[in-house]
Image 1: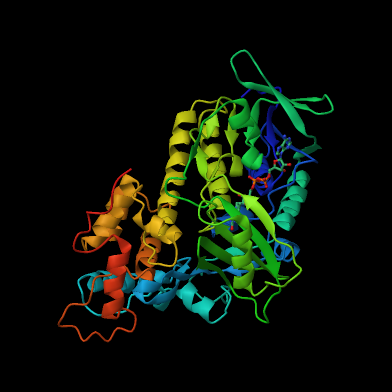
Image 2: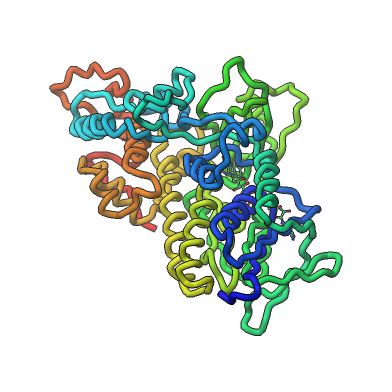
Length: 499
Ligand SMILES: Cc1cc2nc3c(=O)[nH]c(=O)nc-3n(C[C@H](O)[C@H](O)[C@H](O)COP(=O)(O)OP(=O)(O)OC[C@H]3O[C@@H](n4cnc5c(N)ncnc54)[C@H](O)[C@@H]3O)c2cc1C
């Protein structure tokens, strides 16, 4: 890095991604010769959804030394211990299961959980519902928060729910206190130098904002990466069908739950996220299977709001990812980089992970493009493995109420990694070892995969010598599951298909 003039990093876009990244960079490069400017259009609003996080967000606040008492009340935030999936696999006899954030104390219970899942795959009657084993699920069911007394020797893992507008405002204020320059300007044009690098952003009032390095946080518009640098966008449509959402707030119940609910509807699923002032709700659906109008009616019915005056907001989603996350003197973060639909609330998690990897690689290359390829490989791998976990939710469903669910079940566009995971499971082998072998546990770990497969009741019929007293896996349900799932224990490899 030139020791005289500061390296000028320009972040374009002031949604949650832009302000998260502004905070992260200004913290990491405090005292270094780096100047950060964030530019936001006064004419283009932020997407204004994205109200659930993974525990990774806790790491960001800890790193920035921001206490929960400072930010949570300002952002109407609540604790999140798990996601509860309702109605995704009715034919297995399981109405609902929980995917919790695993805690330190679960180290002891996980062994019992995974041993039981293996035993059950052998046809022996044993309990395998994740809710019975993992602490966060038990707390969530009892409506208890994750905070423990000082003398409790284990941490309890959790994420957050928050109002995305308020979180953006909080992060914007904080970043400016840390020295980030803020400019409100709509960018109309982008100039490039002879080598093709981005040189400046031209505002609609004729001003030029120059920089050395640019971060595209312009949401689905992807002004720098797609529109300026022409980086190719790869759609995920072949195995993630949802492309739209309709959203609406509702009033809180008496008690504020500590979980996100995700309920399967006829052409997608609906989230319910508790904040301190309201519930956020949204129906994520595929417009190939249901119109926006029909989706709104179904959504209102589901919320018991059919005759309510409250308006719904309709959104389009661009589901897929850039072929390169770092091109020339620019990276994309947030929706401009890619989006894997919100089922496991992984979007902001991926923003933070990508930004952290970028900091490491940029520093290792002495603030040059030296480690661009390495960065692209690492971040693409993150997106692909998270995508697999989401795709598995659709592939394993046992709903029979619409073509949407049948098409998802029959879809054979699965990655090699996902095929291997399912293959090992249906062959009754050790799934944990396979996850280790593939080196993919940093994306979704063995516990998460066991929760998913067990939560869907993906098990064979009980062995004939078993008493069959298991309340969940009634023989007829399992038979239906196997017929419905197109994946089964006796011809496990037949229908997995390959991309
Ligand atoms: C239905 C749905 C549900 C979601 N749920 C979750 C969830 O539960 N958890 C989660 O982590 N994520 C979720 N997400 C994703 C989450 O909303 C986004 O990752 C997050 O809000 C970050 O968005 P962003 O900052 O990339 O883009 P945006 O919020 O769209 O911000 C774009 C910014 O770019 C600026 N801009 C655009 N064009 C220009 C221009 N020409 N000149 C200047 N500025 C410009 C705009 O002014 C704006 O500030 C969800 C997304 C959708 C669609």
